[in-house]
Length: 391
Image 1 (cartoon, helix red, strand yellow):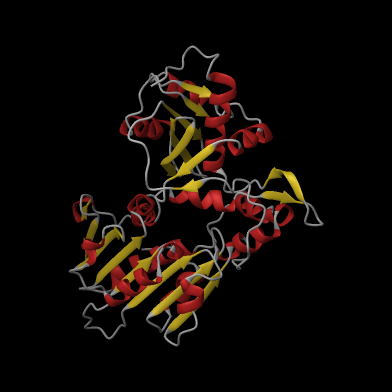
Image 2: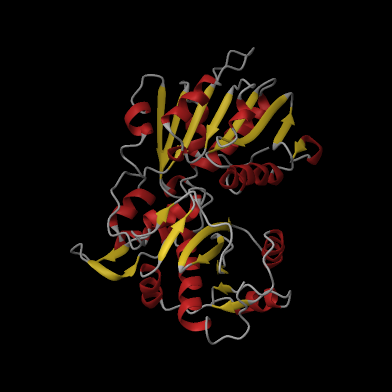
């Protein structure tokens, strides 16, 4: 059984309404708490249908889907025979749990649910919310109400959640901060608290869980498009190592001096062996340059031994930012983590609110990967490193 419940879990467990909003800052335990809640209900109730969803499938796989089974495994309750990885379902105690995204809507059309969890709910539209609410029609023989749980950071004060959902009668509103998370490391708590001296609005969003309008965006020129070229003149990669923080790998295709970004990896707890496995899975050719975080030379050496053309990146922050700002760059709408970082990557401010020539150091893994790739390739290695083979 779960040995330690969060206070956020207990508030959700006691919520008496159909819709339960969990609004909070970074690492406030809201997602972990809903995982706890769904596992608790899976163990204590029977004949229920659960849906855990996020807007896109890649982002679901590396967040709620992964978290659910990590917690279940720590409780020694995971049974591989009950887990259908192909369909992303788990069946336990006559309960059925489906993990799917709203970009695969046919998966939910024929199922009625008792409990639904919308992770990163601001990614969805109001129409998505209403579709999911209509699927909250599973039969219940124990007198418990069907419920729709939303978890999200308060990034957009004009979101459908804040304007069209929050103030209805049949809604419970639960707000949390990093201080509500008993599992948070002291080092990460200090990272969040450091935002107070770097950018007060980011501090409001991520530390206090409050709405704030983000200002001073570093890269305002990068645009989203659904149309990428089929072939490229050159393909390069940017890699930022992490473990407790996400490891991020970007594929960047270059066509006619225009850069097209695809997010390949954005995941915590990856070992070097895991990363090498992913490089093979994404079919990265041995000659294609991977410009990597230079602070981990031992990881670079290990990956290089497997035949990959991995190169320590140049890490000049301002020079690298200037390089990125001078290029024409497009991102995909499906680059969820890259796009989130892009919107929140801002310049630091002094005590008087004046912008400084350094970016806020927080949640910048994809931004570092982008800078490593473009700056190193364009100004350092493109002409001087004979190991680079143009594709």
